[in-house]
Image 1: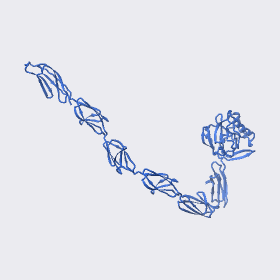
Image 2: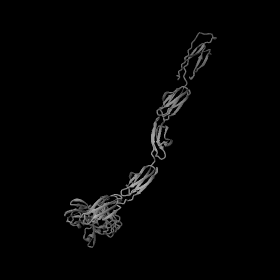
Image 3: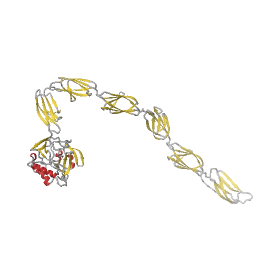
Image 4: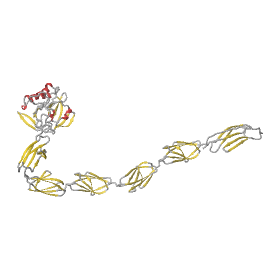
Length: 636
């Protein structure tokens, strides 16, 4: 590498005059260890140039005077070029002719002309090298794209000669070594006929080799199994698999034996051919196994009950019994019931011999309705109907209890050698309903007792009463009434002949009281709680009301208010409750009276029920505390 230095020194020396015919040295040129003297130059200006190899030309203008000697010293500067290097990725080491020369991107200056070798090195990438020719005063630009150092994957498979796929491309067959794989994550798939595809994602490191062994699984089929009835045991080739319904997977292709078994049913068998990648669907309809139980008794002619169902008299042979545990009972008048639990196996015969024992003292308890709880001397005994045996003559307390009914209790005497029969007629439990009128918003309907609401549409409620009524139809003074002993309410069997507005309904009731309908003058409008108690769950004679009532009155007013000008009504033709304007001829009137008097809203005690009802009517008509009677255009 030349260093540019220029140094010129001219020294003039005046010597003694000499003859002109004898030339004198005028120049002395020095360069390194070399020197040159140039003689006999004419006096004038001269241009001196000195060249050397790969160096720049040294030039100087010289004024030559006669008799002078000039001295020059020339310092040469080599001619050079440059190399500009960029790489992707950057910060790679640069080597020029084997010597480190910085990191990319960079420029190498003062490069001597000629051929040079450039190398770019970066960990994880292949070495990039190139020989370049550098010219003096010229610059070379190198853009280097480094390639990631490749790895390799060695692959074997069982079985061999399977196709190898690298990132979805079929490249070879096993066994093989896949070379020049770029570092990173790759997906390897191994495929061959009759086997499931084997796949794995591998991470390839630069300069490293991954070793893979793929054990291929044979492609299998499946069998979908159902049975009637379900929950039957499944056997495949003699091995228990599970219960129906089920799908058996991973079955090798070929012929297989399927068996379905269930207690009490004949075994179902089938041979099925399984194909790879396909699913067979089988439905096994099981046939009941024939089982037999033979029964004889002493004495004969006893009634036979199997699991509580009468099936004949002894002696008898019972066929087609479902396998499992069953209870056999034999009954005969004057004898204790004979009971035994037997286990019936499919296809087998059971033989039973029963010797009945004469009973001594007993009590047979029945009730209407049945399935009521029995308490015998305070101890829970079971449900009606029931028979208590082995009793000694004595007095016993029997109590019958059922939800929704009044408890029944009686003390019975058991006599020696006899069976005492008790028949309890249960009565509905008394239900008290609100009989005092109220301001009843729509939201309060949901809290009404003894009411089941099926559906709501805006402010219309489709519902039914949960009360178990005890209706009695009576004719008093040629007037028909319905007495509900459950709620202690007496109703008009019919009511008004026409549908009217509320004001006329109140007047209609007033006239009925003046006429002492059925001998009473305390008839009134029902509350919503009382009126809705008549709604039945099922429709009879096109009405959701018991047929003991006249069906002409398909609806009825109540005395409960909803807002300023509306009152609640109950409609039996569709089993609903809603509101209607008090001035509208919306429905009928069906009066009611209480068999008891509730005076919670009366500050002064009324001496009679008539006085009480008069006060209620006074509130409705005179003071209008419960309703604002606003006429509308349509009235009857």
